[in-house]
Amino acid sequence: MPSFDSSLANRTTTKLLDALREGNNEPAWVQIDTRYRPVVAGLARRLGLSDSDAEETAQRTLAEFVRAYRDGKYDRTKGRLSSWILGIAHNTALRVQRESRRGGMIGMDEVSDVADEDSLRTIWTDERDRSILSHAMDLIRAESGIDDRTLLAFELVAIRGVPPAEAAAQSSMTVDQVYVAKTRVTKRLRRVVEELTAAFEQDM
Image (cartoon, rainbow, N blue to C red; front, side):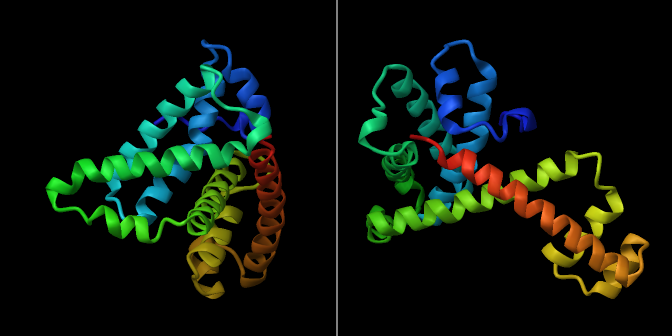
């Protein structure tokens, strides 16, 4: 899987698409892949596919997307990019699942029952938000202004649900320092998530 490139993380999808028209623009492709792959794979898993089939769905979806986009098949005046990719992902998931049915996977009808337009959009949004949060944490971990102990305290309390006293012991802090760390990182995380979400959604 392409590596996460923090230097392009907050570029709008529109700018990335413009860069993607250049056949040799690998950084733009890497960031598009990084932005959408976990969302598509998460969608496929939520539709009932196995982890391996979900990854296969993401790979095929993004490959089909970039071919179609470079062939000029995406019309920004007819809808959002996310809706176009969502449609490709859904159709690809059904094809991958059909190929896997011989291996005892769940039937295609079971996926179709939960794959109405509103359900698909809800799943997509959930997986998008999950991916954005993960990327935001990657960016914060890469920042020099937040030390490792502060990040550890935040992750223990805010993400893993560890009691403050235990988190303080594990991060060599006082309980008060743990609360300060949680507040500080939460504030920064909220800003980064807002920036990434805005960049992700500017795809018209």
